Image (spheres, rainbow, N blue to C red):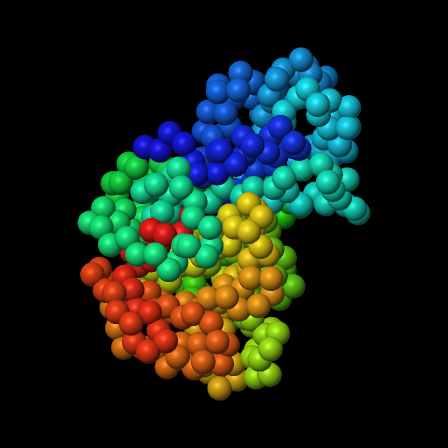
Length: 388
């Protein structure tokens, strides 16, 4: 099991400069990382959900510590003002990290009082590259262009594809324990996180929505069909999806459209942070690649390599490519996923010529590495091993 996550050294560097905000899904490893840093930096860990810790936090009983972790502090209505006051008065002597299983803008009201006072990191599920080499994050220009075709790559890839990237089920690696973990996590998300962070009362229907989403991964999401299935208002479905996004349950992908006249602007896709919940093999593989690419764009952006974003490509002529990585608002890399097909995707070729960017066809099957004109066709285990 990993004793260190790849973001740890970068977080340690930034702790001496500003407050570090660390977000990410429930059970992705934030608490483990926080406790590891607490032990290393001789600090203390406090959880807002614990009544005793909550009282200690409000009384600021940690001001003489060298380092403090405040977990789930965003559940406090005035958390931003609270941190602002701490930073302005004590930041020269106190290193602070705030962690949470919801996006840090869940309670946003008005302006951001922490502007200029914090660095933001997002802890993602484990990826092929992080499991194989947690001490290395390649810069974007050196990542996807390198190949590492090793047997260990495929073993890690297959394990991630089956059990997902959350540490507990990944390292346990048994179907029985994965099923138990999945049921318990969904119960916690619905009965605790959604209940505590929202005004939603129809928790059973929200849980139903969570169970429907795996069947919609990889295709343009139809809110109308979900509305009909749940028998709720169209706007209600949209609001619930936003809630699931803020709680790191799913993430949307929008079509890239800046320079493309015939692209579709309104359609979006949805993917899951836990791709192991998807039964369809092709959709699960596509989601795994989507998660790896999203993690890469977040890491590169958070570490200052550029304004990286992830989109997909689709136009009115039904030409579609799964993923388009943009750097500073311009296409930088396009990626298509296939389970075993090594014949070049026609839309991938079309967009590679139109956008003049590198194009990669990622195949789940191992042992593939070939160049077909401008298109690189490569096995997923080799391609993903180079990403953060």
